[in-house]
Length: 436
Image (tube, rainbow, N blue to C red; front, side, top):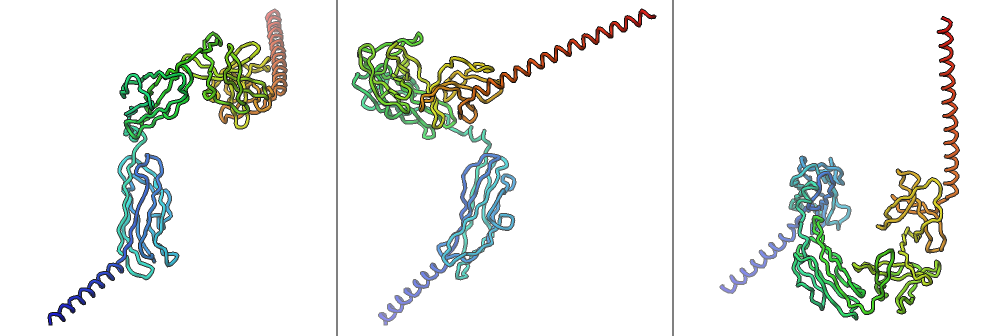
């Protein structure tokens, strides 16, 4: 008897377990998720994605979307009935989700909630699915409010030159350091860690060195845009430096070719300066030889080196898409143009203008692809150039001068005519007075 009761009990537990398991499987549900960015600026639009999904195949559904109308305005929606209701059905027997997009405009500062309600969802087998609602809270701020919340921290927590010791030891409030190295050292690796992860840093990494002073700037920019600059003065021992003078300033000739940036159409070569062979760059199209000169602050620029005269001219190359120009001083400035200074690619150059209000400038230079010298018209807004027709300018200038001469002659004739009339009127008045 006890054995029979025990068997019956086990059977009942088994049946109940099956029923519970079957009930849990058949009681499949659905859910609605609402996603978007967490923050939006007042006056801007924000897109919200609303997705209904289920582990079982969907059949049909009906739900609505609500939101704070005092903070948001609905701009567009892929939902129906005013863009706030989804009355829809599945396109196939294996569809398990559907997504809708809604775009809102942020009206004013505040915390806006977007939510679903009134959900009624059925599976493809026409079973009712219990559905969990979706909700999303969006923070709306003015640009000033957002920027006021940005971090101002632009400090480094560490600054290292790998394998070497800085002097003095790093302190986040100390902005300048020094390091002396042997002449055999050609590069170092600088590692910098920001104190605040929202800040950014540049100027670290692998640094190529030249003999003499190398001024390395590690720049930290806080989230709010404020900048702090750490300077490492790396002095590489320089044996027998070659000193030259250009325009009254002293420079040092660069002896390491890896410190030279090679422009297009140039190849590596060497030249002898002060009895020592140094790296140089040569362009056979225009027959220019470039060497690197370093100023007292360690800044390196390329100079055209004239071997015969032993003179140096600053090399200013301007790039415009496929065209590259080396600026020159023209022998003659076209009529009607006046000289001015402008910045192109952060370089101050000499240019010419017809009209002070024009965005167009005239520059003169050599095309480094062809070697031809000519005038070019530069569009300062679109940063483009095209070859300039000086003959047309001369023709227009002559026409302008001719019209100006005509206007002056006509003005003089009018003046004489008026003067003649005034004289005649005056004589006529005298005659009348005499007759009286």
